[in-house]
Length: 628
Ligand code: GLC
Image 1 (spheres, helix red, strand yellow):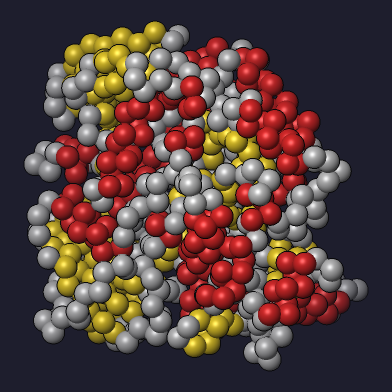
Image 2: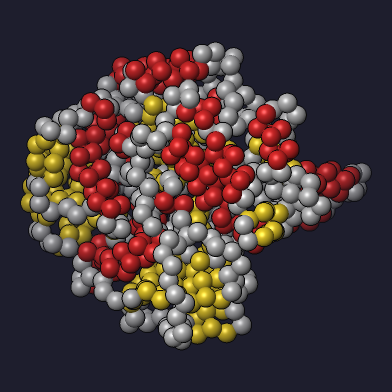
């Protein structure tokens, strides 16, 4: 059963697609006092959900926020990352799902202040709350997903492997990636273009020195089987003579300050303006700009910096230069030194800036801080609405960094700037079910880690997990050690693992399509499939993938294997040096040896396997063998 409770929302976020009448019944489970929703959890209750957040699959014991934030340190103490996914699924004495449709900062204290209390605190009482009850955990998710609409389905090539790096500057750099993978026989479908392809980081431009014949290059790469996937950032460089800026400025399509002047912020291109994605006209205008790249043959994009991320605002930067002068010539003690240093560091993503610019939504003018979480979502929607018209015959690959529930209908998301840390393999695994609950099925993390130094063993282990994530992209930041599958000398082990991904695509893509079609999760915690098994509830490092597969990746340094739990008898499938074998394993706990380079996973029943292929286009879906 689905019930809607309404507390004077000020605008339609667009998260839900079904019109549900507001119920007169009293709000169940929660008490509501002074703007705080409180629910007393039973001792055994698990709390699932909250999409892209840190910590385990069961969210109990920490405090989280729905607040899209650009934070490059995804440590355990963070309350929020790039997405705001305000859905919880409680499974204890009561079983229910709850969605807080609220476009700005909201706090979820899941037993942090009081171990048995869940409190949810929106800043203002302008929200809709949906409560879903009845049936299994899967039933509740299905009901929630039918409320928020169908998930985005990417083209088949988006299930291939992608190689990315901030710092591939020229056409030659991209060609070298293609050549190296080809030479090593490593399948590859996509090569990503980070901001370096642009002219001075200006959206919808191409640096013609680096790509003298961009259109020809895109075509040549396509004929070799590679899709080039450029990045688009939210902010538009303020530069007279740059047509995107000129038009946006003249038409009033940028967010403005209290006096109606364009609000100017610093992002990669320097001083820039923020398209007002909440204004339908501005949104349609920005989306149409993708044409310049689709006309060049581009069939996929990633949208970035759309929390929106602000390094500084023009006003705050000039105030900071003024403030810093006050420290000059003085003898600074430690505290005053720290405050001098903070004059600049506190400028990024500041609440004060978010409170200083405005949007023109159909419902009226809103200060950004009241609608913050919708920005990335609306950018994704702007792009997809346009891409459907620009490329009507084929789906376009699209994913975003920032998101709110609703964005799952227009694109996927990736989990942003993680690190080359072993703990981030596990974190990525643990993020997947929460994201799937909220409809984000096309998702994955930067394989190998975005920040920091990746090592050969880390990449092998990371790939062994990521071959199961729909979005499978190796990406890292400029200045880091190379971490392509071809960067560590011997390439055989990498080739075998990535080849396995391709062999599994008939199963993985099929299960993905089923999950999208039936409003189900592609990745599930074991407890969703084995509700009556208390041991399954505790497993936080294994996942079900589709109906018939279970993964239990190795995610610790120097481990030669790991402990696993089998909720029923299954087949252990092992890929070792390209050979695939299968043996039955009985229900219960086992230690499984997984030497570096091997991939082990488990199946219930038969799994189809394709022949090895160099890309998705050459996969033969008609010639399958079955294992298990
Ligand atoms: C942001 C993105 C990252 C990208 C970088 C440069 O940090 O999250 O993926 O490489 O910007 O565009």
